[in-house]
Image 1: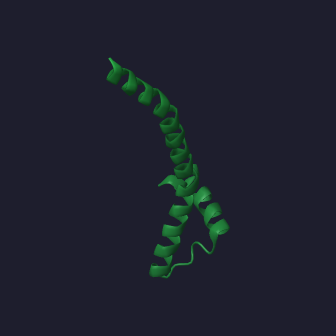
Image 2: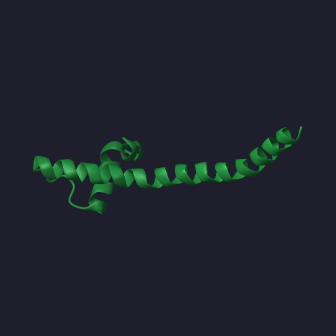
Length: 74
């Protein structure tokens, strides 16, 4: 019985912390993924010698104009 109580206490104490960490990681991914997409597109354009994206802000405008919000998560 004592082992079962220890397991339940451990689960109850670690569940809120685990939930907070999962939410924080999800939010971080949502915020940083568009910048990852922009970085990759700029690298590919550099290798292909194209001039579609000339900076971060220009890339944001171009991606939004051509593909919408979902373009940042492609």
